[in-house]
Length: 289
Image (cartoon, rainbow, N blue to C red; front, side, top):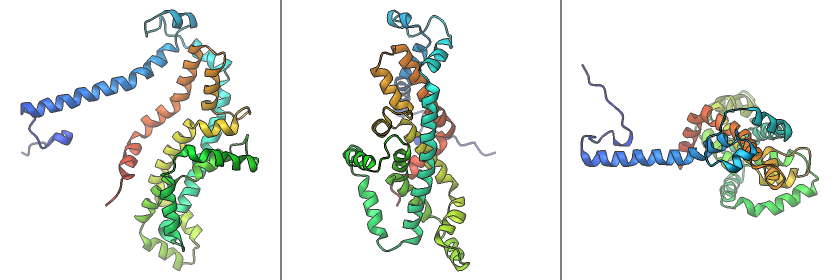
């Protein structure tokens, strides 16, 4: 009868009975626990503080509220019209996801399978654009948005995600692994390149599309600077823009903390649902041999 092998991660080949190995293992374990506690503690503090009244929050030193009552959260949701800004952020997210998948996927497919004249130069520029700090391009970007009279609309937010160098590279790497025989067979049957992209490449790219969708949702939801410049003082302000204005206005600290809880819930839920895919793409995005 074969003995069942155990997988102990990076030390599976070492003997845990060895005192020195066990010491190193315990150090890593304790360090991981400390990092986890330090990372999660602020999250619980914000959530628990939201259950407190204004006076209790100002006077009490305990992190635990006297009672758990969701009435305060409900009141903040209604009084600060959080639902309106959630709707605006949802519109921004949906448009951003569509543009992220379609435009970045189309460029990645062209660079991988069509390879027109100058494709290497274009891909080099895509790589080079990742070296430019985002803040450097804010001023010319906003000037162009103003000249096109797109301020106060979601279009600039959608297009900014639809022209993302990181997404283009991910799509190109994925399409590089797609058998060229599929493309050639479709061309022999008379299919145009766009038809091949929509009917062959996209259906076979569900895995990478899911990853792009996850990243695009997180990027669009948490974006602050561009929505602040484009949507400020309009009826389309997103949750991040409104949160900044809450903090700068005459809103109690407790209401601000409750708003933070509402805003951070969607990304947290998204991560717990798709943490496996997020981990896989983090490994895939590294440099391949």
